[in-house]
Length: 136
Image (cartoon, rainbow, N blue to C red; front, top):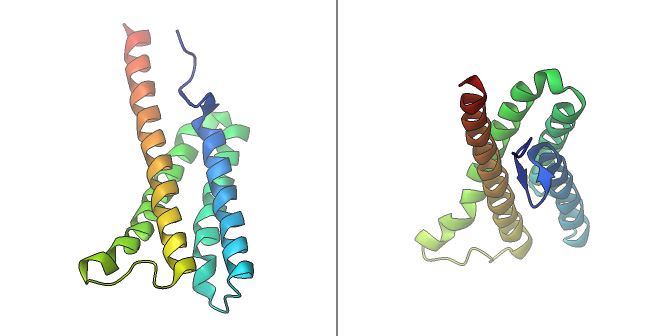
């Protein structure tokens, strides 16, 4: 029997660290390559930084892993919600990529947040099912 839930052979804690670091690097790249003067180009980093830190805490402090991973899931949900703004122009008849860097950043928030949240939920369900099996 599998000892821990994994996605693509990685624990969800490691995925959280990687996803958070990816969002930070993405924000840096978009801000530099897009010559952005706006603080909003750093929103992926503001969301990714805490996700990465919480994922690291879940790895380094297994006694509180449940707490850290629930906070990762909440942060992933916020990231997903932030990324939903990508679809707003579609409903108003505009192009969501009229500002390509901003549009791609919102789409990245949606994709990374959705993937991480889905991974967390699947991990929580797996843990609950395996806890029930070990209790019987």
